[in-house]
Each structure stands twice: as C-alpha cells, then as structure tokens.
Length: 56
Image (cartoon, rainbow, N blue to C red; front, side, top):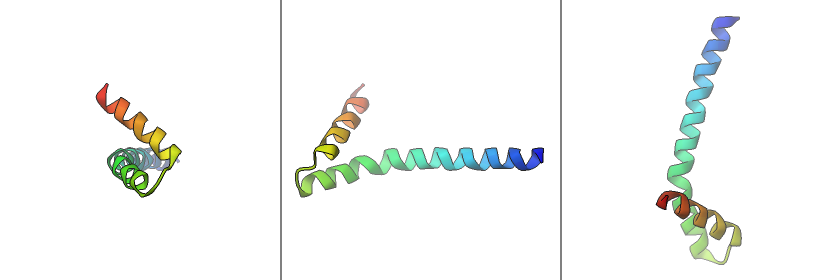
C-alpha cells in the first residue's frame, strides 16, 4: 500500500504544479481578452490583482 500512496503523491504533486503554472501563464491574457469584450467587473478586479502581484 505504501508504494501506491507514494506514487499517488508524486503524480498529484506534478499535476498540481502544472495546473498552477498553466493558470498563471494563461489567466492574465484571458482576462485581458474578456475585459476587451465588455465591462466585466470580476475580470477587472482579478486583472488588477495580477498586476499588483506582478509589480511587487
């Protein structure tokens, strides 16, 4: 049972890191596209958060 759990931990950690990396790379450009289509206050707030985080 222990080898199976170790394998699951390694695989899930890889997926988690990949998901976070992909989210950080794709989300800002997607938010800019959504924002350009029309007024979306949630997209504006999230994009502002990304800009503040990037400038820090």
